Amino acid sequence: MKKQFLSAAITLLLSSASSPAFSQTGNLGISSGTTSQNSSQNAFCEKNLKSTVTRVDKAALPEGYGDLKDIQLNSDFRFPKNDLPYSQPLAFNDPVTGQSVGVYDQNFVPGGSKVFSSWQRYGIAIGGYWLLTTGGGFSAKVATFIPFEADILWISDGDSFLIVKGCNGRFTVTAEVAAALLKYPTGKNGYIRFSTEGTGSAVLSEVGKDTVQAWRKVYANWAPATPPKVQSLGF
Image 1 (cartoon, rainbow, N blue to C red):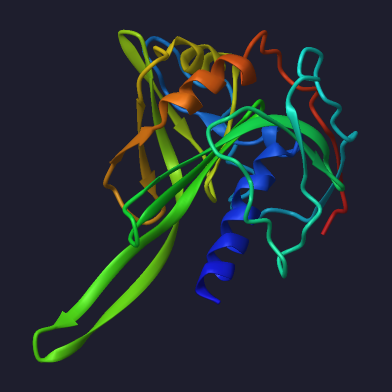
Image 2 (cartoon, rainbow, N blue to C red):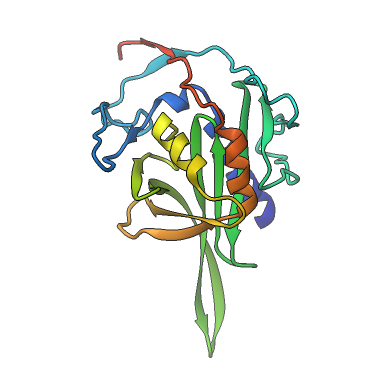
């Protein structure tokens, strides 16, 4: 049951990053010499957010990705897929949002804490769980899994770095972000930092070398998606 719950939770987290609507939300934080042009809050966390309806065309697979393994994201939360491959570029086909390209990564302590990340062409998702153990000695050990979602992401970019602000574990990919990920040297693991909601700590986490190699495919010839049209319901 625990394994099924964790698989369902992370499937929901990672698959949502492919949404074209999601790709248009969130702010890029201040980087060396640049300032974000978008001062609005992330739509997922905007205070006093009004109810809205957004119409978005279903995404189609970009040109040049027809050689990727096709993954059908058609299992709901009751029966999550447990066979999603990590660290290789994939073509995802979602029955609601359409097609997308990305790569999954995981960094974990066997039997312990785990960091999941999804690196898709227009959105990044980072989440997972920490394992806290209490007791021992004269009392039984109690293991507690505490889920988390990242809200600030640090990405190396040559002699500088980008601070990407997100919400609920989701981050927008911009031209700067895509270019920075393409600069990571291949053949070895990469590093990112992230902080989780409600904390000020910045966790250092490795990204597998095969995932870094897959970024060359996912973010090649990157161009922004078409912004969605938003209609307010007015309440």
